[in-house]
Every structure is written in C-alpha cells, then in structure tokens.
Amino acid sequence: MGKSSKDKRDIYYRRAKEQGWRARSAFKLLQLNDEFQLFNGVKRVVDLCAAPGSWSQVLSRELYQNQNQKDAKIVAVDLQPMTPIEGVTTIQADITHPKTLQSILEIFGGEPADFVCSDGAPDVTGLHDLDEYIQAQLILSALQLTTCILKPGGSFVAKIFRGRDIDLLYSQLGYLFDKVICAKPRSSRGTSLEAFIVCLGYKPRSGWNPTLELNKSTEEFFEDANIGKSYNLQHFELPDPEERKIAKFIACGDLNDGDSDATYTIDIDSTVKGLDPVQMPTAPPYKKALEMKRRGDLVRR
Ligand code: SAM
Image (cartoon, rainbow, N blue to C red):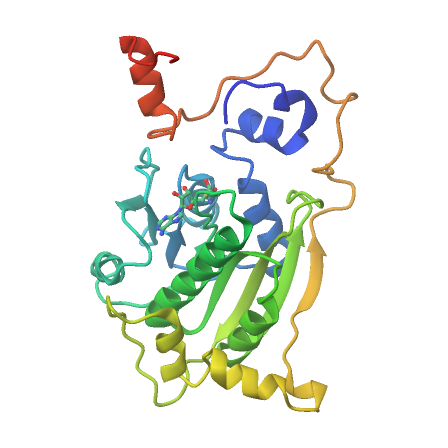
C-alpha cells in the first residue's frame, strides 16, 4: 500500500493505514470473524499466502492481546519475504511444496492446527483461462495442506473466485467439513468475483491418511479420498439435486460500515493528505526495474 489517491477513494485502504494494518485485507478477516467467531479457542494458526502480513497482524492482536494466550503459535507462509510481526513465525516458502508442511509441523511440535486461513493469489498473467486455473490450483494446494495439519473440528478459510468450477470445490469441501459457507465481506469489492469459503468442523475422511508428495497432483491427492473430480462429476450427473452440494452465500460486515465500491467525499475530502504506507514492500516485482533505472540501465531503444 503506497501513498496514493486511493486514500481518498477507498475507505478501507485509508482506514488500514490509519489503524496500522499493512493491507486493507485485514478488514476482510475481521469481518469474517465478526460473522463466524473464527478465533474462539484457537491456539495454533497457519496463515497461508500471508505477505505483506495484515491477516497475521489481526491474528497476532487477537490471540496475544485480546485473548492473552501466551502459548499461542501463529505461522505465516509466503513466497515473498515478510517483515517480522510479534508472535508470528514467518516462513518464506511455496505452499504447494511438501517441505512447507514439514516446516509448519516442526514449529507446532507435531501438534495439529486449530485454524488455517489462506488469502492466496498468484501473479496474474493476463491470460484469463490460465489465471483461473492457477488460482483454482492454489486453493486446492491450500486445502491439501490443511487436510494434513488441521485438527478434527478445526476451521479453514480461503479466498476463492467464483468461477466455472466453483461448484466442484463446494462439493469437495462438503465431504470434509460440517459446514461450508461462501462469504462476502463488505470490505471485498462487490464488483470483484472474490469471496471466501468458510469451512467449519473439519471431519477427516475415515480410512484416509493424507500425505503430500512432490509428484502427486492435487487431482490424485483428492481421488485417494474419493472426492476427486471424477468422483464428483459422477455425482453431478445424479438427477436428485440434493446430491449436489451448494454452499450457502452470506454477505458479512456491518451495513452501516464503508462500501468498498463507493467513492468517499465526506469522510475523506480533498484536504486530507495521503498517508505513508504502514510497511514498505519487501520484494516488490518492480524492484529490479527501479535498480536498473537508478544505474541508468533502463534505456529506451
Ligand atoms: N493476506 C495477506 C495480507 O493480509 O497481507 C495478503 C495476501 S496477498 C493478496 C496474496 C499472497 O499470496 C502474495 O503475497 C503471494 O506472494 C502469495 N502466494 C501466491 N502463491 C503462493 C504460493 N504458491 N506459496 C506461498 N505464497 C503464495
């Protein structure tokens, strides 16, 4: 989050800076928690795809300050380096790699997690089908890791984009959790397909011992649990619509709170100056270009 005119347009962007959150996404997790009480009794948490770290900030404040849990453990994982956050162990790693699971388990001393969240988004290529596929794979990877580390009864929250194959994902999740809800926090732009799946009450498949292997696809992983694509597609063909699991949709966040699609002229008028970012980006994609420009190596031909 830089110093930008967005301060004047987007109320959550501005508020995040005023309240010290590294990203406006903090409000999404806060609003999801207001609706579903996700943090109640939670001690071990995994924040997947966590950089720059606003969800980890929310978790740290909630567990250590509000709940005063001295023995809580929060692990944050991202491909990008993260500036440290009090009480949070950060791992710079790929969530799709089996080693990442081992690293998290070591930090938890082999104990399972109570709550796993993922706000993952891959770099966009601009090729719509490819982007949609990579996003879907990232969610499945987060779910894979979750099934290997979440305690029975635990919760999982992940960002999704309501694209073509979303019914299949809802269906798969329905076999793994007591409740699956598709939630749209008010701070998530209404114009975006973004939403969050809130999965409560993990129920491991009986007789299934999930393990991550480097050469196993997400498809093969879930086939082992009988909830892969082909199993689900057979069920989709059943005439009884009850067989098809569709997630309930809930909008969350106070209606009187800010509208993320609106332009604000009352709270934040033109006299309000842009605020400095809470945390400078550690490894922005434009870093190399800036260095080249400084050296005079960026020449237009
Ligand atoms: N929840 C974060 C916060 O509140 O600050 C924002 C997350 S940001 C929208 C998405 C993140 O997903 C990026 O930092 C990106 O590096 C990360 N990501 C994408 N693919 C990943 C992967 N395979 N492994 C780990 N992190 C990944």
